[in-house]
Image 1 (cartoon, rainbow, N blue to C red):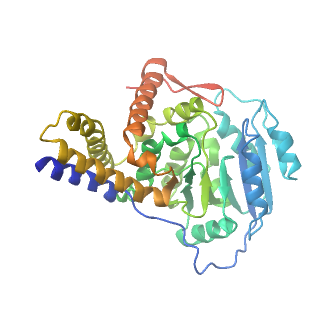
Image 2: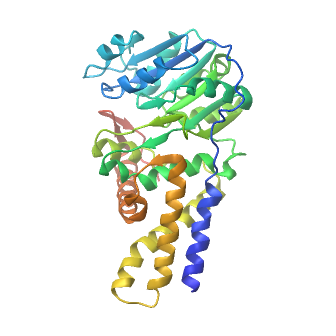
Image 3: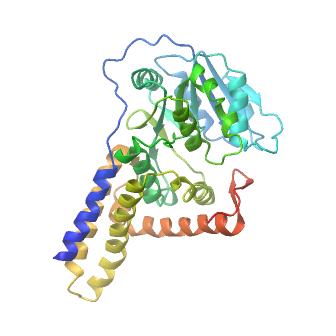
Length: 363
């Protein structure tokens, strides 16, 4: 039973990494702040009605909602105007900026609130989310971000289970609390205007592909605290409209996002993944071969399945089948990692939102 014991220990690494850092919706104080919500949008005609409808229902109303149309080829701009929000057509993209950074920066330049809420277009908020977010930022100080609860519908979306959870681990890992290179999660960031201006905002990370991770480091360098939460019951998203977007979306940061992690975080992530992949791929084979390791491997497989079900209670809607048959998300994970390595090491660029973004050839 040594195999079962080892797999159990590797599985427990996941509980070390996952911290249930949820947003507190109790004892909320009255919000006395002018809130500017800034939403960069490139070909987001399907997502905008969801996020804008949720913003219209907030218990605390933002002073302004600014949608920056980042050279969309669909009806993004028209839909935003139908909701009565401020729409900005993003100027021509300068050569030393990435598209999202440029769009967000131009939204900031047109904003007037003393608290800035940056949201991706695929986000959806509970009715009291802004109230909770502002209170959380006041309590934590500095800048905060939220890893949204991932709502999935189609099978290809659910293949992202392992990749998404690894992203959650990175932001909840206890080893990252003292990391001076700690990043923010770009889908939902809240900061005071004076803090954002203190670090020169997105202009300081203008050419960075992973703007959110680098933005967090800039806040910390300036002595401004960074705190990350998971969006359970408060902030949600449905990330990708096609499997191509899903591969490109996860692929652009799958390797690059690990560069600033604490060694302890990477060690526990690797140990957890090794156990998941070993039990996931080997258990079915050894059962068919009637091998002596079949039962302990099956024990490990079941432990990981139960653990995934527990994690997903707080992080995402993936159905019951995907955590039980986690080998499918493991195969997708391996494919995306290999694709990411190919794009970064061989091509020296990634593809996102119809743009090819150079990252230089990395080792």
